[in-house]
Length: 166
Image (cartoon, rainbow, N blue to C red; front, side, top):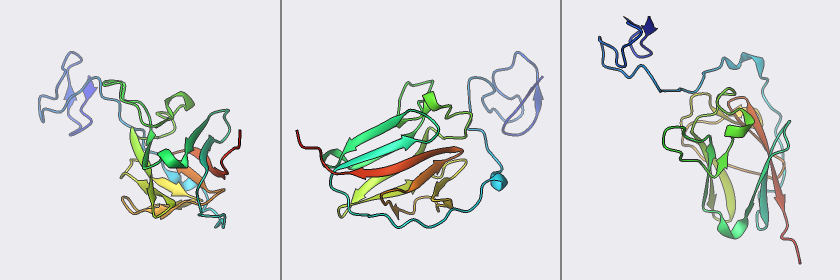
């Protein structure tokens, strides 16, 4: 039997759609929802919000990082690749176990406004946290050098670097 994720009705194994409500029963991988009682509130950080060089997003406890030049940043999508369409965000965390760690496909976005960077949660299933504090969906919060961004159970460290001279 296949339990419908929408209404809970038990359907026959060969059903593709729920006979009660019409919801799709196969091929849909949803973000796993976590109970966040095992995470503590973060401590405030006071790094610089002034940003002119490079943005580095380092995945903590991994060897992956993403670098962006200030001149090219308007919006940076963060999340995981859509297995059905192949669409991937600018910061694709799929290889870091994003699905298992509760990262949504379009989890959050970094936007540039008035020379500063802001993080915005896209109403993700497991929330976006800035230095341990949960963001309100669609409400921008300023990013500072040294901040930690947690998407579900995956954390990235924000670093601002000056432009390198060649």
